[in-house]
Length: 319
Image 1 (spheres, helix red, strand yellow):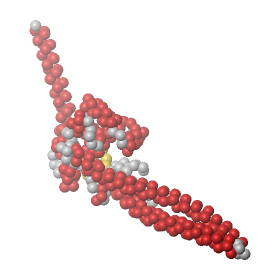
Image 2: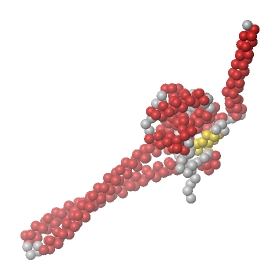
Image 3: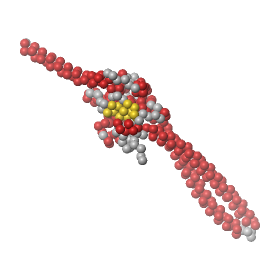
Image 4: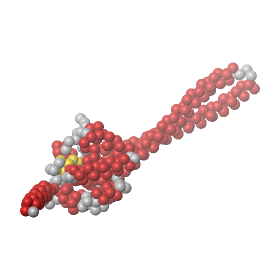
């Protein structure tokens, strides 16, 4: 009995020690965060970003502890890795900083906020323990498999080719900020980061629509231009044949000068054909004018689209 009691006492002590160690590890990050935030006050802009994305108190802490900063293009390039082919709007430096490119284009209102939420979620994913990360990864991949979106598939495939290990992390940020109607268990998970996650998704949809509607307009204009070009080409080919026929008819008319009746009959037919030819010329002229006007409108939209791209393009400018 004494021996059994002694063994039980040792087990309890060992168990207590283990729990104490586990407790210390889990709270070490909280102590570090407290130390970092003890004198921290977010700038008005950063606080507004956190509020507008409806970050929870937990998310705000994650966001603020990484001392988020809005940067202009040159400074952003210095602090974030910007590739030659990819436009980067923010970066999360693990357990250190969050940098955001300060987009000033009013038509792209919401870009900064969505980017901030995206980077904050990277920090959140970074801090998941192994069991929770495994659970969340499963939810993310299941949700991804249900989403039929070409753009998302291309983005994830690009990440897979570059570095497969970051796919789940990126999905965690992308799905959390850009997609509606996620499975309930995943929505419940994201609720610890957002009071109203759909407010962030709405911002993402709004600025994405600025690009998408222009892409759609350009595609519609291009389709119309192709149709007009085809019609112009067809009528011009017909006019060439008609003109050749008119030249032949004119030559024949000359041969009928000694036969007034045949001459007058040939002239009547000729004049009718000339009328048809002139109608075709008028039609082509009208179509060309419509084509040129469409080109002007199409190029206006293309210029707008280019302006939007330039407003978020953090890559080094080509000389």
